[in-house]
Image (cartoon, rainbow over all chains, first blue to last red; front, side):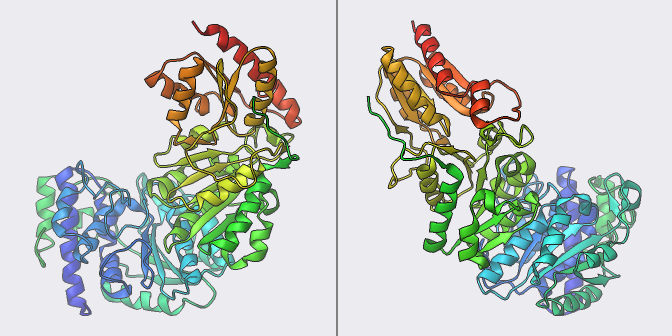
Length: 281
Length: 318
């Protein structure tokens, strides 16, 4: 896939998937999922050099780790539509006996998932370990990871951030979903974190900012810059400014839809704003 | 009664270090991580021989566990090293999610477990780690008794697919198991044959159990000593078989009686062969500063305590 319109169409379909998945089980996290839809679509369909089939070790391909596992709806939708498992399986999200658990897990053997996440703050450490394994295997492919901005309140991240810079883990691109929201309110209200750019730079990372994190072309451009900064002795951080709930007007710019599903009427409005492009599952 | 000879006191952590050194030479998938305790964990040789496969993470255990999980992706077999307290309680959620639930092939190697850490006191003397680790689905839990066994176990767990908690200690203790032993995960080792009482011991308490058996024998009580180096999966069969013969059991461990080996044995027996049991373990308490010997005596974890428990449990038989 290379054409921006195709990526945008896929993003619209992914938004529909997200809304329908969380609506069906009246649970899950639509806000952060919608905010990162463009990023996931761009990552899996344009940015990463990945194999079509899944094996856990992932030697000879780029790997992705989702640290803020609660945005599983967008992850599952994009994985399914990238061919890792049948899109019909999105129907089983959060249901009993499903491989699509509330938060991603390797436990049920879902292709595309390499570590469980949900308990926040652990993904960067795992990504660093995988990046070190790549180096030991003389595998020049990259490790990508995604983290919530609120998630950076977990201390383990800063252990990892310090380690990665101190040990020149320069085959890692960690993206921070900078939507400024968390469950209890805005990040500034809950626990002000100051300038994340300054913090990452002070820890010795290269920082790339993507101001329009819901714009496919801006994402592609920014991630290409990030990629060009790898292999230079420093880990790379992408600060991706997104709008939580993006693409569904009443869900945007608020933390209200962090972990709340739309009702029937709200679903209908959301779907109306995102016309079917590639076919619903 | 079969007797065992102490070939010279050695610390179990050095057994770990020696095992890791050997693994470094024989298995290039093995990598090691340490959180600023290389000397204490005896990981110096591995670091020196294989600097590219050694990861000094600093005082950051949570990151160490997560990195270990990540290193398995790409086929590495990571061994993490720090004190037992920082290997378990400090990083429980990291182990739970990134290692156990994710079924990662990480070997969590923990030194300075229990009271025998000594003078540093209760902040460092974890007595709850066996319980914490055995409760995690899929986790194998091993507590070795001497230098030779710790070395053998270290080598053996590299061949086992899945997460392992390997627990050992700081002090020099009798080294009495065979240097060339084959370590079988989940397989109890019967050390003496007896007819009156079964003593199921793990870790540093195994030697104490052997000492106790000698004295009990002189008193006319024939004790069968079983070395349970693997607490999970537990060798149910070996325990049931012995207890069917002796009719009572003493469990002995350097751990809280809540959550330890004793409770695992009690469960097996309750289900299959209800049997009088006495627990040699700490009694839901924290430790304190002191020499290892003083602490083991004060908290009732030596051969004298095992003897008393055996005498008591034999009387409880109907």
